[in-house]
Image 1 (cartoon, rainbow, N blue to C red):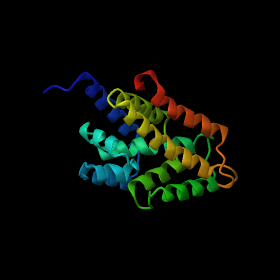
Image 2 (cartoon, one colour):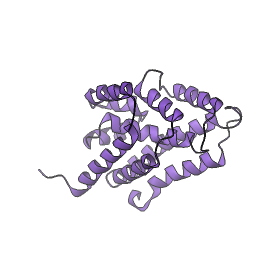
Image 3 (tube, helix red, strand yellow):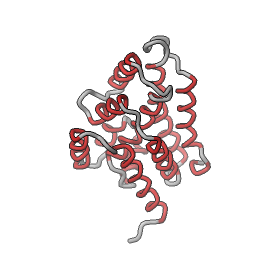
Length: 197
């Protein structure tokens, strides 16, 4: 049975997103990626790597054969992009970000935590955000309006919480900078593009 054209486009966008997200990681992270690829693709695995809790969205992602590493990158890209919105990450912001991530049940030693920690040290290439945006837009062509809203609220909501946790002076004050707000707006725009209506 042939896949519909949108599924082929989504598959290509998924590969671009994964390549951008996981490019040039150290051997340890690549080994963890291999372990993740071996995980059973079920709601618990997807929930664990993404923080997405909406059952309908998780079931839809499974029905689209979206793998855990793709969902991990869907969830982590917004966090990393918000962290780098000011073009630099000082030690205080880094610590606040890592503490905020732990409060979201992303624990030290997990692939999610180590990937974010790596991206906090080395800014990811611009193509990662482009790949993420294209992938979200491809998903929007398949998901219902309710599923799109739920996915947007979860992914951008986590990024907003991180921005607030790392905002202000060394995490105090819970303020989001103008650059962080601009990045949150960019992330939100991926879901409000014409393809997502």
